Image (tube, rainbow, N blue to C red; front, side, top):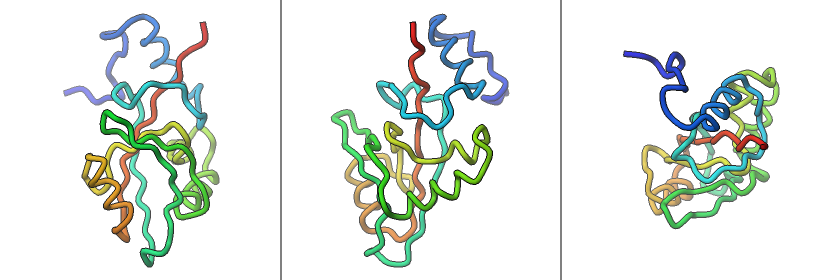
Length: 143
């Protein structure tokens, strides 16, 4: 069995897709708002765990629900997610930890293992602890 880190991206996809994947793997697109169509083609996924002491505490993630069942992050404001992002900024820019900041244009794939919009919203509103699976797609390369 081959791990994802050792797969050859040239085995599938168009030449342009291969170029995008290789550039992304070289960390040429660190922590930028990304021009993408959706997480189905994501090359980078990570999990963020946010813990609040009461339901009055805000996570600070503004998102939009998409017709195809996905949630796209529009902004991260005052709240626990912003505090998480600030902590991640202490790591070197090309480290995995630094890249685990939640940024606009990221996609929320699941919350506490739930992947339907209604269930994800429910957990974001009613849970003290949330495990958020985030997908980030590589930007399109300029021609």
